[in-house]
Image (tube, rainbow, N blue to C red; front, side, top):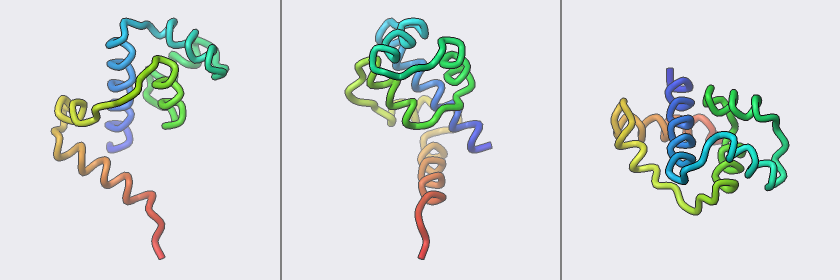
Length: 101
């Protein structure tokens, strides 16, 4: 459940940031290619629509569209499962990746 929710949130954030700039997925594809990210349009579209992309790909997209900052708080507030749940989700995922002694 948490992974599915995280993917949906990642999809929503990326699509919103693209839309804020008046861009389309076709525009994004051209901008990604210009920055050296080689991916077919169909593959890029499928990754984004599934929300199944690595964080590095998200960063590539954000750089390609010229994003300088990202206000996650606003996305967490708009998130259907509430900001506290969002923070717990993010914190929970972070804890999973921390190394234990």
